[in-house]
Length: 334
Image (cartoon, rainbow, N blue to C red; front, top):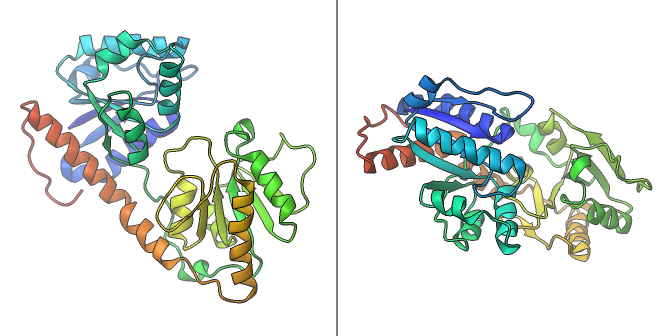
């Protein structure tokens, strides 16, 4: 099965790597092509013609933006070059939020959107699929963003002596990721240490003394080991990797979307965040805060990368079968 992937660079390239890593038993080979500036990688026509599956990651059809219009034109061209391929739209989070806003504001190019509404659609979470259903788009829940932590030494699972909260706030999207809420909560919890990854806090002038900005880090397993709680706030989200990785490290997670074995708070509910942290601090101070073992077991089971890609391979094979393309069964579990 030859799979050609376009679209959002981070998630598109990641999907192609995962398919190549775990799809061998399904005879899958995937290639990602970035067609966005400044790194254009326009494929040869022969490459497009040979593809059995062509995937669009992000970039929702019908967007009124210049980039959206350009990608729709490119998508039209792919259909002309290879009309027999299975075309898959992968929705990853912000694209769902954008297309919903375009539709509500009367800006969605409905002709283009309707033209491709009947193609195969997939999302990273059931919540995104439910949102798309409001636009009459039926999407399968097929996450591919599983756990990508190195093998964890069991000694790293011990909770740290100092109660610490780890969160994720990139500088360029600090408001989207709850920067203001984090600061307000930290000021009400002066004895709690907060670590912020992905940003340096350039957006914040008056920093609370108990908040440390770490920038982008590649040693996340060490940061989880140094933390008691993972706090994830996002205006709109599929399922943040810090949530799943935090659970896999047996940490407690506070999140503004419902996920098993986490504490759910509202995005703007600073009081709820403070109360949730205080409850855990009290248990920590009393020596009664155990590891979140049930959360770890759930994350390791449900978000095993090999299992996720196996589901995706199986779904693609089934879709090709419905179109009359017969493929051999996998030689082993993908």
